[in-house]
Image (tube, rainbow, N blue to C red; front, side, top):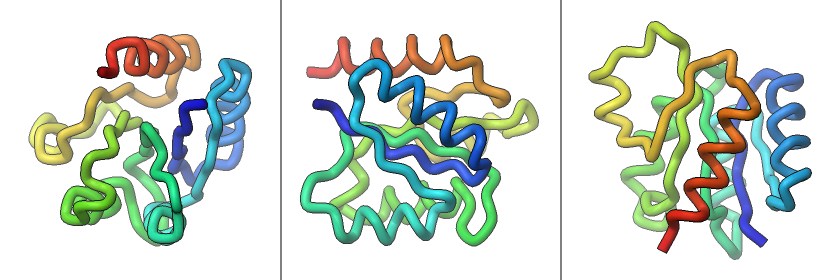
Length: 123
């Protein structure tokens, strides 16, 4: 079973994404901010196959998380789908090297399409 880490501070959004992905038989773990996610990853025996990352969060935002992730050889290979506001700069998107990005508010059908395609195209 493919596992996905959702990092999203908004409880309703996180639960909605979690619920729809679980209905497609993905194993979901979730965190409410980047620091919580890094702590979880540090204690994982098996890394998630994909991360869905919100950029705007308290404690440690998505940009800070992604920068820390890319610096850590244990976590750097995990692909990321960024959930961004429409005002996110192209420079930020390029610097964070996401597999893909989706504008918020996220259409759950678009998210499922992107996630399913990611796993279909995975080697």
